Length: 288
Image (tube, rainbow, N blue to C red; front, side, top):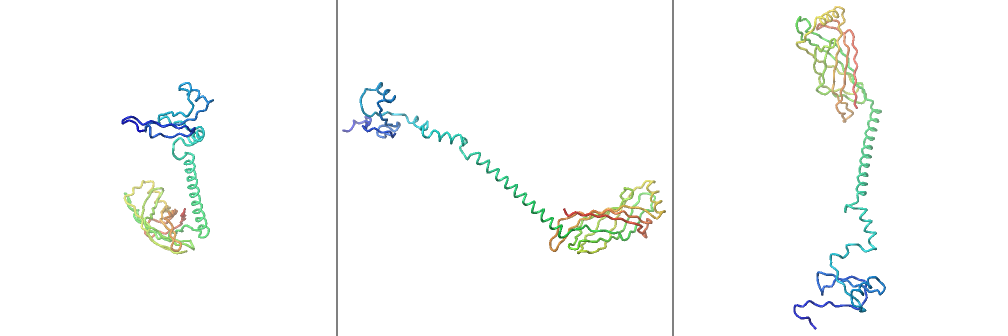
């Protein structure tokens, strides 16, 4: 028999005993119907008997939806606690991410160390096979002018220099930007540049360079020292040079290397016909 119009539908009951929980859509969409088995000796049964008429059968209890499963079932409580403690942030575990970062760091360090080892090995093999040597320089002649003025002087040194590439397996390329200077008693008298040129293996090359100074003021003591040296036929100068060179092995060129030259040069007089009395030149060039 149908219910009267406007009256809420009646809820059906079941005489079966069960332990499952289900939603009852025929009664209300806002509640959940849970069927509970009555056990005569349980505390729940005693409580129900005190609150309800003592009738045998199955009872239907309506429970609000917002109170269902807020606390996990006992069989899942331990698993829930493990997951919560292991990853409180809700994303990937910090231990996992930290381990990945450390692994990446160690891999990078290992790769860099291996790369440096390969470079060092290559350089060592190259040095043992090629044995590079710095060029050797010899001053062949010197022409000196500009020391006759009683006021500021403008000296000029024209030098003929021989450069010897002692490497038997490599050529040498002299780059633009090389320079040289002449000193007397620590005073720079003249300066200039060294021309760019190229040398083959075990080759001797001669070149000329002009070093000039202007408006050099000398004290009376320095002038007297120069005059005394000229009278003795031995005027000492110091020549320094910085050469920018590259070594070439076949088609392969090295990076730019600085070759330092330091010469002790003694001439007999301060004229265009000056002769070299003695000289001692040291040079050094380091590829690395």
